[in-house]
Image (cartoon, rainbow, N blue to C red; front, side, top):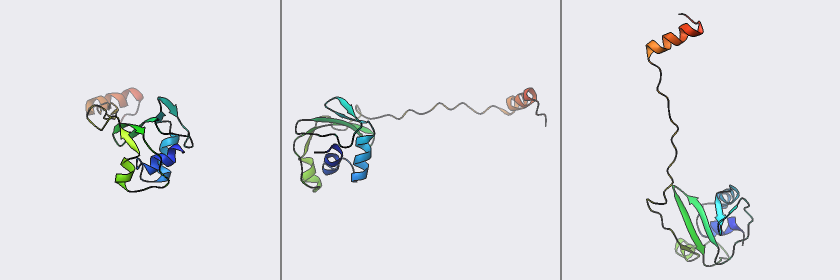
Length: 117
């Protein structure tokens, strides 16, 4: 089965389009190998590693589905090897902001540049 279709069936993504974008983004690993193809074939026993929200999810595929079902049915398609916790949380990197120069420093800069007011 296609990777994007399985992610959608397992309710890892809300829409098939979102599943396709995730699978094609290069953020999904299948058995430890990075894949950037939404049409990558997956089978029972494969281990998927992918970001979901602010956590890294690690799922083992247990079954395939013919169609997208309810949430309890979707949970039967995989085994969660690493449930969400503080350990596997993605922390966004905040860019360092330089403080704004004080008024005195701005006046000195304008003087150096030659823009006297």
